Image (cartoon, rainbow, N blue to C red; front, side, top):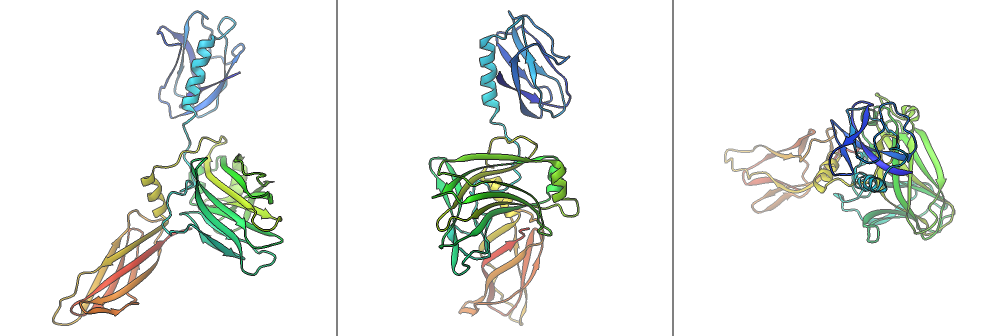
Amino acid sequence: MFKGTRYETQSENYSLVNDSSKNPIKFVPNGYTRVVTFDIEKQTPTAKDVRMVNRSVNYLIKVKPSKITKTTIAIKAAGRVSDEGLMQVEGIRKELDTFSHANLFINSDGWVNQRGVSAGHLTSNSSIYMRDRWFAHSGLGTPVEGEIVAYNTFWHEQMKMRVFQLNSWADVDSIYFFLAQNVEDLYFLAGLRDITISFKIFAINKPTGQFKIELRNVDDGSLKFDILMPAPSSSEWEYRKFTVPASELANVVNKDKPHLQVKFTDINETGRDAGFGIGEMKLEVGSKATPFVPDDPATNLAKCQRYYFKCFNYYSPRSYNVGGSFRHILTVNLPVSMRAAPAVSYKCALGSDSGDVDSNYQPAVSRYTEHAHFMATLTSGQYLRLDEVVFDAEL
């Protein structure tokens, strides 16, 4: 059996036709949308729209507009398909296998880190956002005192990718910890079709026992679907993937509660300094795991800033109204429209030519998805200074 590829289009029809050119095999797109794979076997074709051709001619596989389906094409040309033709198909397959479905996870390569978080420790039953969109959590441990889970992100030189790492830290008897992301409006994104989750994972120092993928509804926190599997057993990478059927997904999200939380959970019963490293997490629509392809940096950053944005050093003009005080408005425009009107935290000072009048000034704030207004009543020579502003619209 040989693997090949075809263009996936808008109808179920495809045809195998005589090619008068010198090229052994060609794929000709005709209204294609993306690429799927098929198998080429040396057996009599069964599809009624595939016809026999002479073994002495080359082949042109031409795809008419068709539905999005996975198709197996069986080809036989007077008893055999030429080795040269099979090699051509294999070469095309390898080239087109780099096509990838959209990843519904954001920042899976960990490139964006607006919070500046790299490494640290969690106490029992606490959480922290690591790189943008991904947060780590430590469950209740035994014992529960002190820092019991270590978190870290680092560049894995051998695999050429950034790794999210979680492992037990104190001498705990048992602990669970997880890495998670909340996915917005999955009901509408997936249209209640199958979804597939894939990732690469390895053990930190020693196996921990069990590893679990959990799907929860963000709105009420309820567990709707989980898969229990062995924890990674060594420092060698394992590539794992699984598909959640649409029927199960319907139990997790709906039009009234459309947000999905995906948790990568380690159930640790082996004590200190054991856990997992994980990378290239992918969530995609469909029942097939396609290759991980990171977003370009600009797109990745814009996606992250839809949920969180941090900026520094904004100044209002100085007030020179000799007649008395008047109201100033300092506007901060956001680089992208946020998911919702964000929560705003800030470090603000009321300054003047002679120094700060109030280093912890509290202006009135109006928040919107695309900008925020900071309002203050100033006297002559005063100005408003925002040293740091954080806009948070995380799910």
